[in-house]
Length: 278
Image 1 (cartoon, rainbow, N blue to C red):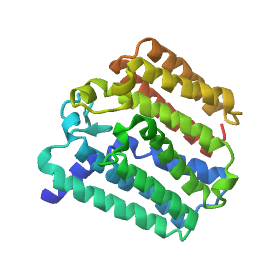
Image 2 (cartoon, one colour):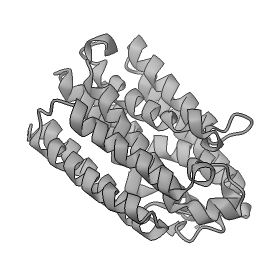
Image 3 (cartoon, helix red, strand yellow):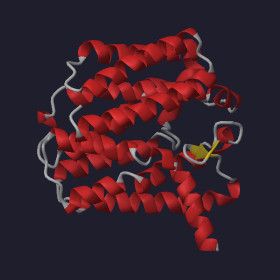
């Protein structure tokens, strides 16, 4: 029973609703490079799901324990629950296990560029939450770390049949969408972070300016990117319209709804673009 309860805790820590995000981004880079599926690439796709999220979210939950207990949004099996202090040691072990599995999957590729991008992703995933650097509370340099997570997953996939020097503009422009989602996530946690005296972009710049930054990120992508996928074009237009509403009414409730909608339809757009070229 103790083993089962620990596994269940690890699953909750890893946020099952996020398991597909980085694997889909990896697949986007993988298909863009026209690579052929191998056991190493399949293993890394799996590792970027539950194991990597276990590492990143486990570390995050440990160092966000004060704000999470005051956050009503942290009561969701799919997207995160507040960690009980008595489970800190279990969360620490979970993070370590997730880290080791993810790292081994990268080492098995025997691909130097892949390992470099994986290392960058792991480092940023750690320093994002952990003091003294804790990028989460350094909005100017912390927000782009969302983009680093996206880029590392994309370039890991792309490295199976190419170098990031050959990837072109696409991943760099798309990373702006990830920055926008980071803004919305901070906006959704505004009250809890303010109460816990967390220095996020939303508590520093305010709700409206944070929502405007997210909106303009989507607008830049819409204007600057020559779309080759109808699904991604439709998704970006939807994002601009939805975030226009959020800029007019930057409430936490609307931010939470916007985050769910954009995350779900963003994953669907990546899936359609990667597998069906729609």
